[in-house]
Image (cartoon, rainbow, N blue to C red; front, side, top):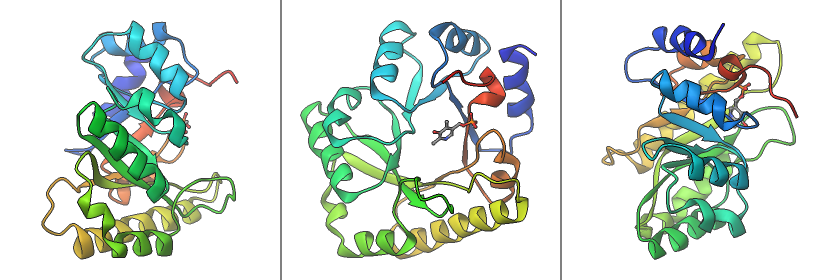
Length: 222
Ligand SMILES: *Cc1c(COP(=O)(O)O)cnc(C)c1O
C-alpha cells in the first residue's frame, strides 16, 4: 500500500472531530511530501533538530506537532513555529515554553503528558503530580504557553485489557482535570492518545487526537 492509501484507510474510520497526527519521525522529507500531497497537514516529530530541518524544507502550511521528550534548552528552536507540544512533562518545561514564546511573541498550545504505562522509561506526570501542579495555580498566570489538554501512552503490550484500562484512566483523568480546573476554558479539549498498534482502543476511550507513525510510513529504521 502507498502512503496515500494508508492515510485514507485510517482517516476514513475516524469519528467526527478526531484528528490524525501523522508521526513522521525518522522518515525522510519525501515521505512527508507524499502524505502532504494526499492532503495530510498535521505532522508529529520527536526530535528538535529533525523537526527543524524538515520544517525548513517543507511547505509553510504544514502544522507541526512536537511529541517527543523536550529538553528545556531546546524549546527556543521550535517555539517560533510549533503548533502543539504534546509532551510537556514538568512545570519547569511549561515555564520555559512561556518564556520563549513571550519573546517571539506568540501563543504555543501545550498538552500535559501523563505517565500511566507500566514502563519506567516513559516520561510524564503521575496523576498525583499533575493534580498537585494544577492545584498550585501558578500556571494560570501564563500568557504564552496555553494548556489545551492531556497526552498519554499506554503500555507497550499485547494485553488489550491492560491497554483499555490505561486509556480509560487517561480519559477519566481528563474529565476530572477539565471539571476541576478548566471547566470554563473552551480551549481545554484535547486528549492525545493512541498510536499505530493501539489507536482503536484509544478512540473507544475518547481520544481526540491519535499519533500514528509506522501504520502510515512503514517501520522506522533506527
Ligand atoms: C513514535 C511515537 C508515536 C507513533 O508511533 P507508531 O507506533 O509508529 O504509530 C506516537 N507517539 C509518540 C509519543 C511517539 O514517540
